[in-house]
Image (cartoon, rainbow, N blue to C red; front, side):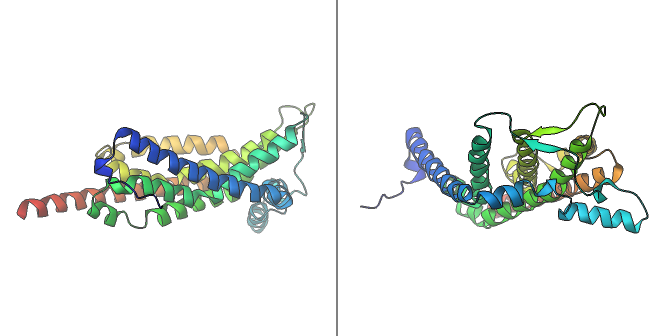
Length: 278
């Protein structure tokens, strides 16, 4: 017999925990299944995706090289290869890297389904009007996440690898990068940017529960600008152009978040006014 979903208003705390447990189990199973698929696609995942930013034929390097060439400037992006090698230093290092990379790949690809399970858990507790206003949540949040993933992979990751992989304190020191260190650099850039691009969604819900207002966001905009520039300076090569390339999308997202917060408050004020008049 099919299991019927209980009325959220009649569910106890333990019932909610049980419901959450099944949502987490289904999300985990989806990630594992997609991770198995990624595990079987080892050549594509590693040779094409993970180690793509190590090759100077990577689209980002070609783009920056073409820009520098047209401007008559010399650029490290026009080199034939990056001056470092990737190596494994532990017995189970490559197998461990294969397992964890597959799991993270499963999480990235399965992110929309994870959001779907999250939405199924929280949506019964919302009013009909709130569910109607939140329609499209999964689509918008997934689109923002994948935009962030692409930005991290094609901008942040190659800029970081190009800079860190060529940086030397002395010619006596060779850059021989461990596989786990290289993969963690790519993974951090991709996952961090993917989650960072969720800022408008986060601000939307924080505004709805009253924790954030447009005035607060505007008040701390200058501080946010400084933080973004500092982070951009850390994860990019030491030139202004690269820092701007990374900082601009984040600042645009911040400005969009202010607008979203304003719209949410206006809708709430209008709803309260309509409720009083009726």
